Length: 314
Ligand code: FAD
Image (cartoon, rainbow, N blue to C red; front, side, top):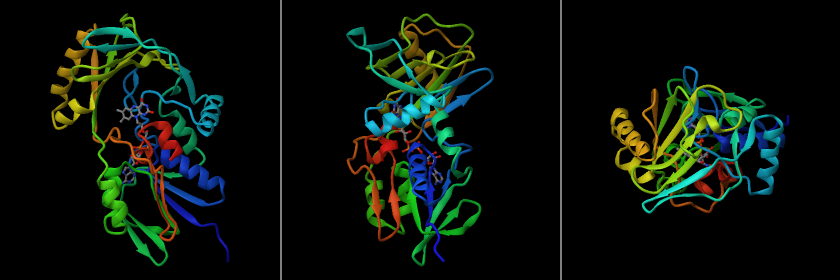
């Protein structure tokens, strides 16, 4: 009896979701797993009491024709919109306005495109894949706390950050494990700030090229947002790596002092998030990896340049 090959995708960030969608549309039987409570990975949004804030990816580009068409589809579904912020650049020499650029965001939050993609897929959340095992010509997946999963898959695709793919590959694909292992993905501290009223800083977002900060954005100025005034601070990769094991109180004190130097007042409340693997440096050029003989694939931003667009294309 002929049946459509069963493919397991591990990771429901934008790369895994795009891969799963493409395979499903081509007639494959696809199951996608993520360890988190929902899809989106680093395109995520934290929600609190009356506020929300994108604390991973801040915006995305759409330069590739295929990705532009996909973003247009997201826009028609109300899951994305262009964002035209007033952007400053703060250098040691002072501040200057950045030229306008085309940027998109998820609406009403950054995780919306992932939710849209996941709505047509068989996604299982809160399943952490802990091992891959060869079984005949296929693959058996093991989940943390649950042991081997019931199904045996014809192929598996790891759509994970390199440091999370490496341990799964070590026993079964040492060459690919070494590639993932050799990829550095520095962390990033994110601080989400809440205010009772809009701030008048004269900019919606800023690149900061000195001190601990790298990026500042008024989340509540992005299209489709409601709720309380909300700002996001990202520390630079270098500062985050040096302070990755610091406690959140100490990190917040440093980042709030740096924000104060840009005119930012003390917030009513704050919430911190530590991304252990935020960005890819340096970018690789593989785009994706497919080992046909083994039925093993790898995709994700780390193979293609470290952005949302790169991850989707991968
Ligand atoms: P991810 O989104 O990381 O998805 C991987 C998924 O795998 C996650 O959902 C995770 O929960 C899951 N997972 C991990 N291990 C397991 C396991 N063992 N079992 C099951 N599931 C597992 N990009 C831009 O284009 N513009 C920006 O402004 C921008 N800013 C950024 C700021 C920060 C702080 C960060 C962190 C990233 C930023 N990026 C930005 C990068 C962008 O977010 C990523 O390039 C893109 O989201 C990566 O998608 P992905 O699918 O490759 O990986």
